[in-house]
Image 1: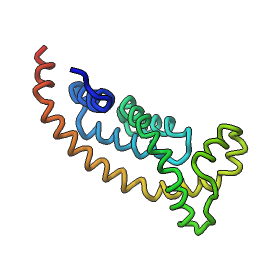
Image 2 (image 1 turned 45 degrees about the horizontal axis):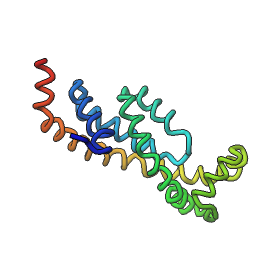
Image 3 (image 1 turned 60 degrees about the vertical axis):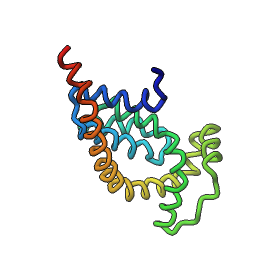
Length: 164
């Protein structure tokens, strides 16, 4: 039977981790960090952030990087809203560039883009630092419950593998 993209790229690897004996809580923590660090509002930094978190917190590196990769579109979507929240926090004038314009600027000349966008990045990072901890806790709470349920549902498959 042909499985969908979501099943093949997300559910099947998670079930494989459960079969290997990784606890639902460990997987939930890896996924939560992957999502939260994956939307960090500095393009090009998330892979290193996720790798560092995996090392520091002893998380599953493949799962955190998989989630980081999958949430890249969400990072782009949240870039401007995070900058706007940071501008509000600092009572700064709004940046008059769209996300496509910022990306084009970065592709044309990264040093120029950094010089122009550093303050916007500071605003976005400030907003992310404020919102990330509660979002991480909420994601972990939700994902750990879902994964415990998935572990119970997948238990016959896990038992079959253990017998072999």
